[in-house]
Image (cartoon, rainbow, N blue to C red; front, side, top):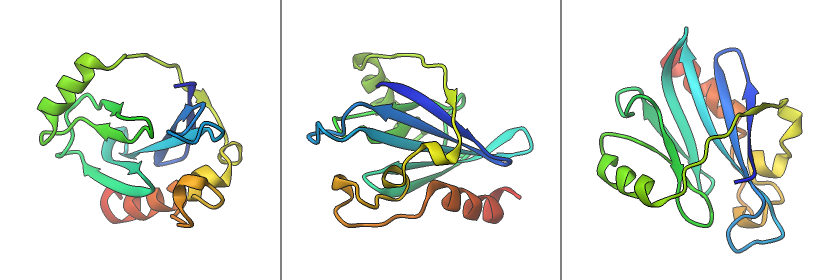
Length: 144
């Protein structure tokens, strides 16, 4: 991993985990979003995106404190849940653990191809919703 960027919004934060390359695509860097939604000061929802598909986790799904690991050369994010706890702990024991201090970024600092897949070679022509749009939709539905 190269660094972690933090895009702050009123009711959610988007952590962008940044790698110098995306799997076999050595000429393309990679940003993987992990979206944390809040109800007041408490986490109410977590959203990850694996292979351009959003995954949704309620607070009841997650193990607290929230932990996320990235498995494989395309860096899909997996939060620790009740369902995957044994697998997660095994992977955590064999993967290199690194702490990063996130750097604050504005939404315009993360290029569109990493936000929506437009023009990204691993998106295979798919367009996905921007993480901001997904966060707003889920916030309105579950965290208000």
